[in-house]
Amino acid sequence: MLKRERLLTISEMVNKKGILTVNEIMDQLKVSDMTVRRDLDELEKSGKLLRVHGGAQSLTYTLDQELSHTEKSVMQIEEKQQIAAAAARLINDGDTIFLGPGTTIELLASFLIQRRLRIITNNYAVFEVLAQAEIPEILLIGGDFRKNTGAFVGPITNENLRKLKFTKAFISSNGVHNEAISTYSTEEGEAQQIALNNSKTKYLLVDNQKFNRDDFYVFYNLHDLDLLITDHRVSPRVKEHYSQYVHLKIAEPLANNA
Image (cartoon, rainbow, N blue to C red):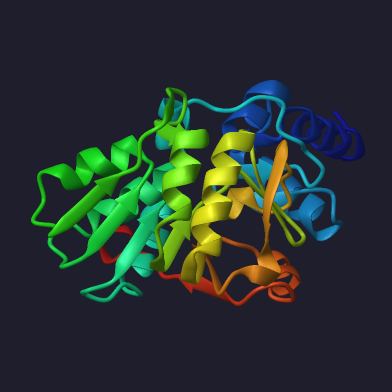
């Protein structure tokens, strides 16, 4: 296969699937790891795709279906841990914080198990992490349970969240495209919107694969956030683009992952 044909095929594969690994391209095209990585670098430089850890991501891909909690929990683990650790350092003892849905937020909870905090969440997995910890006060907001993400949503959730005020709110999302923050579920988006509006300081935690991606429901605007925390694998081009909408904090690799 000629190089030009190979580059076109890789571009089509990435746009069709959204995210593609180096191994998948190697298997499909029967070429070496080094060849694939050179091709991906060239396609990124020409603006055809976005390089991510272990593969590539489409710049135009729209999510067609929501990944399960299990699928999300094994993706970008090191990057999510970096982000969670960086977010934890922004939390002070005595804070009243909201933790939203998402696997990155669950990792953040694991950094807070011995902190003196009041924590409110509609994320059942977060509650499970913190339930055995020495936290003075944990409040799980109930409602309709979304098994796919482990989040409580709906009218009961929203009614309770409207009555509460937070010093800091930490949320994640399925996609960030220009200033739009989006997720798959309208109900999850509404709950996060309420929590953000009721918080003095607002944080978005997203790994490098979430940029330039759209999902079904746009629930917030980057301009209205105080800080976006992402991992060190975000590309310089993405960092430059999104810095015009919100202040970015790039999490450093953890010591055991360096």
